[in-house]
Length: 476
Image (cartoon, rainbow, N blue to C red; front, side):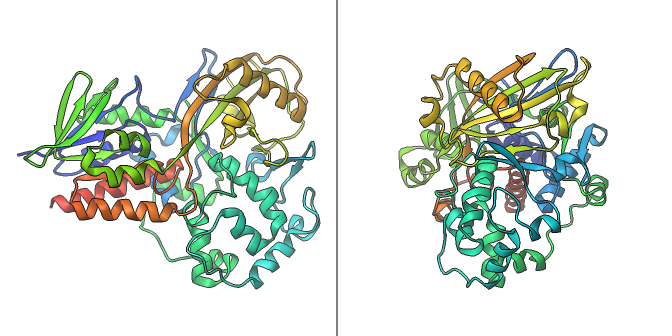
């Protein structure tokens, strides 16, 4: 009899899991259950009548490494090669990244010359941080905050300014709370393996699986820093949906899950508001805390660990200024927490992806990121915050930082509630405890999504693929 796999959550992780299952030679029956009215999760794009594209979630995707190559391979398999918009290495959005410190924009060094001389906002050449790192002893802790790790190895100034800003840009989080072992495992492993992060990264850690494609070879040759898709990042989940539809996958939106229970026949009984679904295996692609609520009382040890994985909310404000020009060109700028706690940074979308500017003449498209770990402190409850308040904060930031005082011609405000999981100190122990529990209890339950092993789109896609590979291997 054909097995049934239920995938809970229709974001990029859940869609990828369905895709990998549907492509397997002995594909099970696949049922995708999504609570909201649309698939794609945080990959969400608005396309205006004149062809402009506004991203409300992730925008540029990095092509580097095993996980980056894997995503480009899937993009190719879905026939999206012609839709890819690359940002090559010599592009201003690849070379120019800024920090907003002491009321001014400062370009981060991107060449050897910039490392050898003092470049504001730093008080001495970054070369000294590198020399400090090469001489620093190996750490002895099983985990460490990112701020502590970078302070110890590269010096406090780099941690306070650059790393603080980076963690706000990547995780919308506080580097004084986030774990280096879980957020930047490559850095943690490099120190463990080679005693030095610089040496460890330079010498590498062996080859990953071969995931080559014409796209990834092009990305390497042209030194892409990132890429997007012509119609916006939502093109990717839309292409996955088309594939799943053609392959007979049952997809249900507005599927409000109430409970997960095990039957006497060792199946999962998934109770919905308006019925139920039976499955031999469940792949959970919903946030850890959302899964904790659904579990039966006997799985309380698992639910307790899942509840410990918190997530932060981000205000995303898209702004378009027709006829305007920016005073600088680059990817965007980040703001360290000591400068402005609730303003994370501004992305210059029209510089990296001018193809998405639309046909209404020259314009500047920006995305202002607000809140994160500082959302409640700056704006109150994410459920209650008035959009007008976020919009006015974003417009004021653009005026103060970039000198654009005119009223924007187009504005979109979204509050992404609990959108980025926070891998705080000890997250690795939590994920290990979860894995051991599932193994010990022999539960046919796979956990994927941003709550566990990486928050990037690339991580989510790769981890979903790996989870399906393990499931199919077990079934043989």
